Image 1 (cartoon, rainbow, N blue to C red):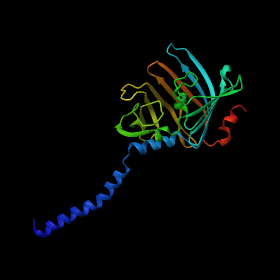
Image 2 (image 1 turned 45 degrees about the vertical axis):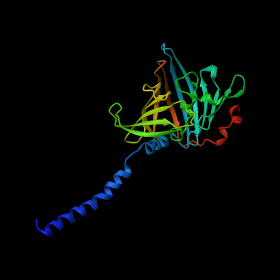
Image 3 (image 1 turned 30 degrees about the horizontal axis):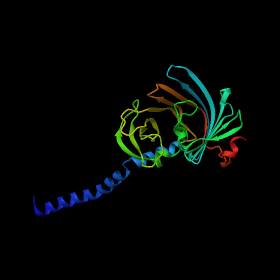
Image 4 (image 1 turned 90 degrees about the vertical axis):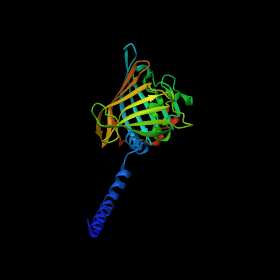
Length: 262
């Protein structure tokens, strides 16, 4: 090869590198990572305001079932949550107010007309004997504020391409769970499975949440069925979402202790 041809060949390689470099940088910049993915999950699950009508079916380890019906209101991306029960009769009118991502919880008892403030650690407790804790329902954006996240790769769920995320509790967090493992759809980052590990270093989850019957509601992907499995007690709780509205105007005044017994 002549000197001139060698120079032309090297020049062509250099120009090809320059043309490809911007695309390589853009591809690298667009590559998903744990923090960016969990931010998208958080944005999907927590809206500015939301109103729901739900039916909760609790099945204990012996197979006995009981049902509860309630309305749920959320505000400020679920930093504030208000739950009002309509059934069964024994708890009709009872209400729960959760503020600051369930760090502050008040309960209103319709039979006595009294409001009681729960201890801070109560957010780890079962909500009305279900497999959902207060934190599970009213935790708001804890996925982002209380956990560091890492993308572990890809793992399909029932044939659906998913990312696998591991969330590790940050020092100083009061969350009940040391670790969370999520499988989120690659198409839109909606979670399909969330596993909850209470102890650090555990390899077997304590609970598993399955999100299904996912449909668009007012342009927002929404699970109409949430199944929480307690893998230790072998009980389960299913929340069926009958009504959901992301455009309802829920005033801040509804999320106050004073409004609980009105």
